[in-house]
Picture: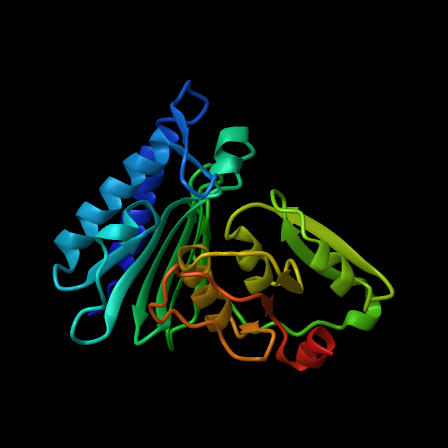
Length: 261
């Protein structure tokens, strides 16, 4: 059963719920980790969880907004990994760079991923073995193909977080004589790499499972990789507090050694 069309629809409808709060006066509270939580996060969370339970009752759900409710994958090793509103700071600042992230995990690996940016009306989606796709503002869906870049003809394009300063990143950048930087919020950084608008996304600060899994699937099915600093793909085996190691996401496999040297 191909669940991808249904997950795309769920992400889009969650985006409609989020946008009903955009540019409106809204409640903002601070969570235990210091990150903000808005009415839009909560509304999207409740909608997605309800929809996923209806779609696939046997698959358990790990959502950023209900972590204590999650126990374990189902007996076949599947679980949903959800960030109802990735980039809440971007949502609050109204810069449009926030997403809905939904991934299906099988035995620790993302096999389906949807990233929807409701303010931009652009959706990225992927399913293991079937490629990555982008649909932009009602246009025709297009497949994102493998990426091959001639770095000698231009500067490397490096995408980094708009909201998180990173001293380790500044050290890593010293390996390049020249480069261009692109700042972007949420999981859209991965999507720029997947479609070749950026060459690499290095992340040395903390991220959680729900920040990365859906977009990782998009990058990998476009021919790229998301690797920890030892060169292994990020996995999502359930070790609390569900934190990723530092990683580097890139599109062109031929340039792997450039980023890991």
